[in-house]
Length: 127
Image (cartoon, rainbow, N blue to C red):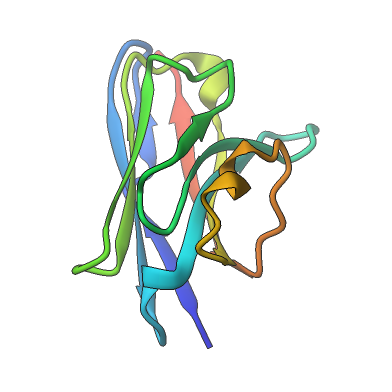
């Protein structure tokens, strides 16, 4: 059973940066595509970014392109989301998710199906 634990959230001023981490245990991430999703109060959950199992394919929501970067370190069984130039509208609970597939094209799907989810970490962007 794959377990995902997010960390790195917090309060940051507009224009600031945070790096979220998603540490996996119980299985290797080598065969999982990974995603970051977020949910703001009163809004539906939305996909933020996706990275294929090999790392060869990534995708980003239009709202974060050029500001966020997803990476993975399979040796550490960890996925990261570097968030720069944060805006108040980035405020949300951020979730890490895993899909058991090595198909790179999964990240071209605007709504990939994820098999496992973390508990989430709060990101608040405010002055």
